[in-house]
Every structure is written in C-alpha cells, then in structure tokens.
Amino acid sequence: MMTELHRTHEDDAGLYLDDLQIGQRFQSGAYVIEEAQIKAFAAEFDPQPFHLDERAAQASIFQGLAASGWHTAAIAMRLLVDGGLPFAHGIVGLGGEVAWPRPTRPDDILHVESEIVEITPSRSKPHQGIVTVRVTMVNQNEEAVYLLTAKLLVLRRQK
Amino acid sequence: MMTELHRTHEDDAGLYLDDLQIGQRFQSGAYVIEEAQIKAFAAEFDPQPFHLDERAAQASIFQGLAASGWHTAAIAMRLLVDGGLPFAHGIVGLGGEVAWPRPTRPDDILHVESEIVEITPSRSKPHQGIVTVRVTMVNQNEEAVYLLTAKLLVLRRQK
Image 1 (cartoon, chains in turn red, yellow):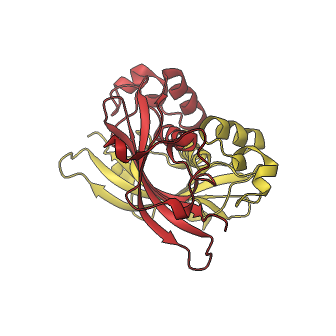
Image 2: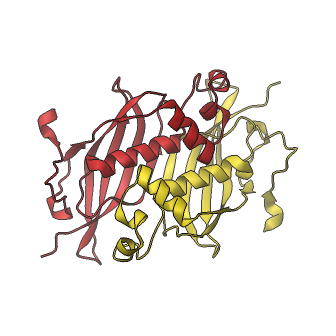
C-alpha cells in the first residue's frame, strides 16, 4: 500500500487542482502528544475535568486523561500543513465533518492519512475548485482517533 | 428574542437529558480574539502565512490576517464550556459538521448561540442519549464566522 502514497520532499513545489485525482493518497509525519500539552490546550480552550486532571478523568466517560477533541483536530491540521497534504497554496478549509471515534491519550504517536474523494471545479471561478479530502488520524496502534472530511479550496496552476 | 434564551447563573447545577427540549436556546458570554493569540495558535497548529503575517495575509484569499479555523473552533468550545451550554456532565462531542462562512479577524468580539435541534435517547443505554446542537459563532457585527452542528453525549438525571 505504501507505493500508492504520495510522500512530500523538500523540493516539492506543491500540488495544484490540475495535479489532483480521486483516490490519490497522502501520509503525514508523526506527532507525539504529551500530557502537559493536553492540559495546556484544555486550560485555554476546553477546561473540563477529564482533559485537565487524571483522577477526574478516571471517573469520567473517558476513563483516563483524554485530549480535547479540538486539540486533536488542531494537531491533525498541523500534520497536514507540515507536508501531510502538500497543496501549493496551502490548506484553506470551507467546512467539513469531524468525528472522534476514540480518545487521544498522553504520549500517543499520531499521524494522518488523507485521500482525495471528490474534485469539483468551480463553474464561476475557473482558476479554482473545491476538493473533498477524507483525513484519518491514527495512533501508534493504528486505531483511528479522529476523522475529518474537509472541503478545501484549491487553485489551478497559473498558465 | 432575548427572553427565549436560557442564561446560565453561578448557582445552576447544569442540565440533564431530561431537562432538554427541541428548540431550546442558549447564549454564551463574549470572547475577544487578539492578534497575538491568532499568531500563537497558528505557529503551533496551523503555520500558514495568512494566519501568521499581515503582509502575506493581505495578498492571500483572506485579504488580511485571519485566525485558523481550528482556533475559531477552539474558542467556540471555550465559550460553550464557560456557560454557553450548561450541561451537568460537561460537553462531550462524538462528532459533527463545521463550517467557516467568513474569516475571524484580530480584535473580533465573538460569542456563540446554540439551539437544541434533535434529542435521541439511547436504546441500549437508558441513562444517556445523543443531543444534536446547532452552534453559531458570531462577531461584533452579528456576522456568522463559524457554524457547528455537534452530536453530544448527554446523561439522564440519576433517579
């Protein structure tokens, strides 16, 4: 399966709408999430006991400290920006669907796998299109912790 | 319209599945997003030029510095946790849909308005249910900058 994956290199100029096809796949590097980061993110954006305190988390539905789902989502974005989805003009999302099938835990080693599932050239703006990408973030046990289906704005190569 | 809104007070114990009804609405407090926060979040999770640098942002599709969509999403969560959605057992999301109809800018004053749109008691777990909430984050001009339709796990009151 690895041969199907597009891997990014330092000298890639990035991909345009013209370069994409349905079924094309990409894989990111790895990101290790640490307990201190989980608590710091939660303190700023999602201050609920199960994201901040081990004992409270043990007694919660998460049965242990879990990262905020929005922290998980933000890490997925970082992995996409850092070469996981090498689009020439960056990653500009209009919206999408998110799901967290299982918790992200301290010391999890995360990466994202992405697949192009739809390409819709704009009728009114010929230099751009909407690309739907299905992103899966998995942990070190290859368990999916976050699913994102995103609609991204992608530009055509300038002629 | 204000009289329809449930406002949270310090002495609220929080709402259970039993307390919710379709059409019920909630409103959060306000959050001011500062330029330094936009850049700090972007540096950590979404290091793209239009979230980090004014000049690059001017030349981009955003035509000015814009917060990462995931920063916007995280702020919405903070507003929900800080009383915007006063559920007794906290806000536990299974997934949902997100959209960013317009950029969030430095010094925007944000708040979220939420409405219960669906309540589905669990068949297999009688003490819980899934509640669908439609959340809109608006800026100081009442323009929607972020839409979230979230499926949340909500517990029944213990009898």
